[in-house]
Image (cartoon, rainbow, N blue to C red; front, side, top):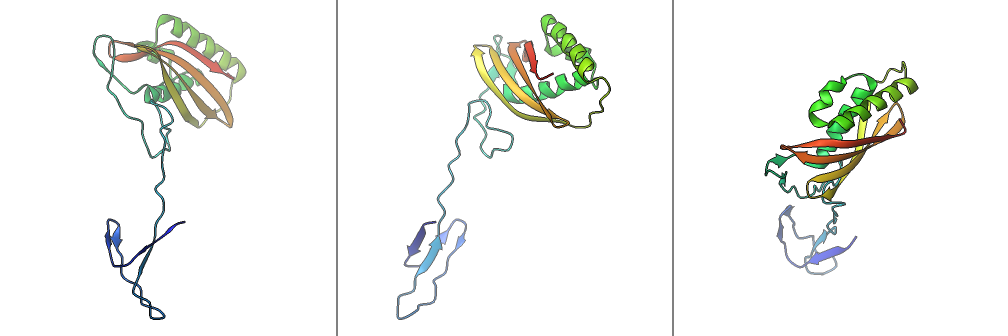
Length: 178
C-alpha cells in the first residue's frame, strides 16, 4: 500500500487531514495512506453480473418498428424463472403464450413432460436464478443463457429471443440437465 506524504494540511474530499506532531526536530508532516482506486471492467455489453458494482451501459433497445424493449439479460433472468416454475408445475403453460411462439410452446410441453418423469413428486422450495448472459445474434435477435440452482442441482437454460411488437419473444429454448 503506497504512502503519500504531504507537507501541509490538506482538505480531501473524504475528510480533512491534520498535521502530525513534530518528532525529533522535524517539520510537521501529514501522512496519508492512499489506496489505489479499484478498476472495474465491464464483462460484456449486456450484463456485468448481479453482484457487480458497475453496470453495463443501458442503451435503448428498439425493435424493427421502433418500439422500446427491456434489457435482454434482465429479461432472460425473469424468463428463466418463469420457465422453471412452469416445468415444476407452479405456473401453467398458458402464461408463457404471450412471450413464446408455437414451436417453443411445443418444446416447453415436451420439456415439462420430461421434467415430470424425472422429478415426479419432489417438493421444491427454492429456485435460485444465477448468472445470465446475452449476446446479439442479429439486428433484432439475442441468444442468451442462464443457470438455475434447484435443491443443490444446477440446470442451464439457453434461449433465443427475437424482438417483435415491443417485447422479446422466445423462439427457441433448450435445457441442459433436465
